[in-house]
Image (cartoon, rainbow, N blue to C red; front, side, top):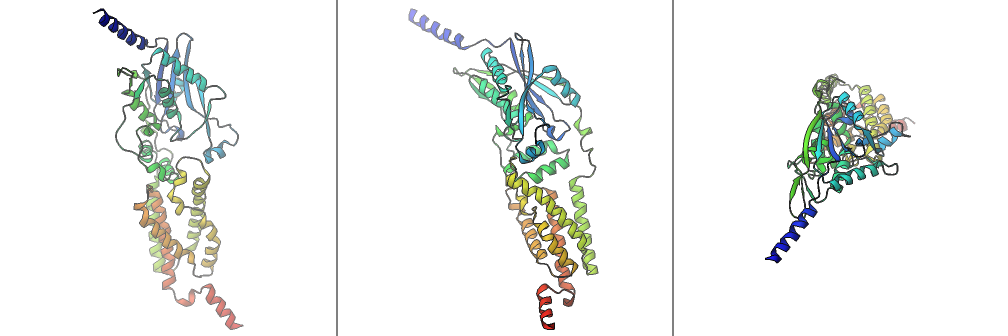
Length: 410
């Protein structure tokens, strides 16, 4: 009997030894800020607050800080070589900024043990040191939210089990949830981001978006070695109410890319019909289109080949948006001016038709604006082919025919 009591006492003592008291002096909160109006804030923001009563500390650690005054900032941003900074901001300044911005701020106070809370504080204090505070930002895989997630994962003792949203989604589908009221920003993303954003994500990968991490955190539990579990989030509180984004969305430009693309396609179809009826082509229009095509292609090709931004290097639009039209522009102007046949129009018509037919089998979701653009270019090439076929042959002399005629005269 004494042996049983002794063993029970040892077991009970080990349980109490493991059950470390929860922190009362250090309070750690994950802050989730709703989307703002600026392009860089459309997807929201995540930060982490540490309130240390003993040291009279109440700071927000923010991994989303960047410096516009950095040397060659714009050039580095285009190349995807932007470095972000972890910075500590007094709580009062942080909350005032987000209230002024009109963002909702949700604080999830974490249910941490004393050693876990100390570990989080020390982890963050180490991250704001000059030699540690800078990191290479990656919007999809290494941002303000993933950095906070890494901190919590590293400091919690035991197995951290999140409550994941099970709906299968891609990066593009998630981004569209936040840009649906901002069609120009959405189309800009779709033009630049390639096939890599159209693969289904793991549950953890979805947490690059603040709202997704907040939801995963809300029902997360920590399991210790004795298989006991505790909720990670002690309380959740809204500290700042959101201003209605819908009232401000879309104020920049009334017409959407979809409307403009549809109207442009209808106009080009009308021009095609008029050209067929008049048996002419309005070639100055095509020179402008080729110039716009080539300049847009320079941007897509540059991002495809040189930028380190995530997913731009897998963009299938580079097949139709590239600088080649700029190279062909002088040749086509000369041919149009002299009313000569141009192989450019036959090649372009074939390629554009093939590209449109192949779109359903591409691993990338091609945006509707790009489809409109390809269809417009195809219609212009068809106009030239019809023009070549229906005009009398003596009005369309190609270069070889002209050279033969010149030799006969000699």
